Length: 380
Image (cartoon, rainbow, N blue to C red; front, side):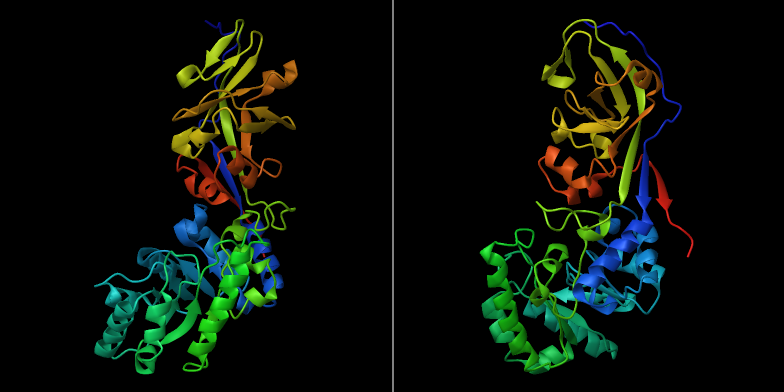
């Protein structure tokens, strides 16, 4: 049993997710500098710009000179086209499903093609419509995910007329281990891509080449080719794990404290009674749980930030709340505590991901919809 020494409710009812659009713009500038020019750097804005809001993020990138955007689905492409207008190149990374070729053409988005059958269907759609459009061709160089296999690619290269009819003007592949610079897979994929690209360019000399993702940009310039396509680095995730993050932090997550209490006896905390708080400990319960993207895997491992210090999470994360040990705070600090931060410049996306045994991508894309979203953007 524990006895509540003190209990109060925060005046702020919801968590606040602050998204620094200026930082996203600065990160894009950094990436452009790495690849050598704005025109050689695209932006991946799939999954609602990694959960941060594509309607606010995409215009910032457009103002910085970005003209090439990558999304995951046709629906995402339609939204982005409506937002950015006709000049942006929008590539759908997961391709075009059978029967949606005309919708893709009508939306003015570029499908990524993985099979000869898809390429023929796209070419047939162009012929029937009497329109000209482009597509991207993706090959598998070692990721073994989406991409055309070597045998099928060999066969495709015997049909130049199909390549031309389908308007292939971008060849892509995806690096599997770019965040591990010393991994031999990087060089193997680079050589495979170079060989495949050379063969295609013998048929289509103007075809553009794209291999580097965020981490690939930081390998070396041989991975850059014509168009790099960073995603996670734009949003502050470290593209070079194990070394200082060259990207600016983008998000701050602040949660209201809804109860502060001192436990007077040793007691278990949270579901499953997995952890114990010692007698005399001070605990704070914050509104924000796994329904809000505070991943359950952080339970007993994560922490929060307040008064310039890390405060350990104790017990399992609940759907709407989590508990933190604030014993290290001074009495006056505990008295004034009405919010804590789960993400900020000190408690980074990558650090939080490590607590949860995952990656920063999942942290960002899991952030819930119950937060008040505030965007920081200075006037040009």
